[in-house]
Image 1: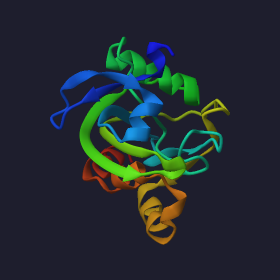
Image 2: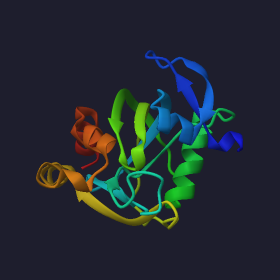
Image 3: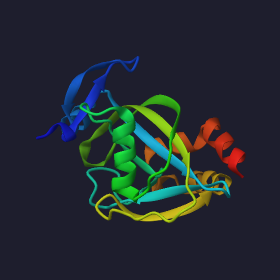
Image 4: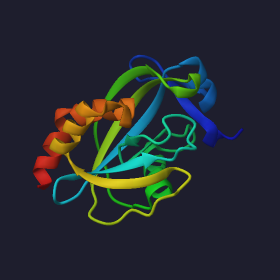
Length: 177
């Protein structure tokens, strides 16, 4: 196990209180820090990825552009940019938008209990997928996304359904469109 397999444990106020193996944190449902990246193009469309079916949870589901956990030994900005490049082959500036806490049961008897830090950015290119992370991608308008989430919610990750409803994401999309 390396520090890259570790997550930052936090309290209910998002104060760091140590680290733990990523799988152990998900097996025990321990609160830890995560991040989710939302990229929107100049037409106001959100770039989604379909998680690889081989992922340790939520495989084959549509979700935000990129998501992962901050590494304990790296500044958040470094981890976030590195994961965006690793998963989607994208390098673009990102801005912190907001954070929220959630807890849910996942497949494979895992529990997601996270302080999710949401970042937003612009991107008008074509992603280069890491097939171990993402098996597909698509661009979707937020109004169409909300309709699809409401009619077919099991096709989307739990946390992304929460993010897609947040007013800040909708405002960001309006600003670029």
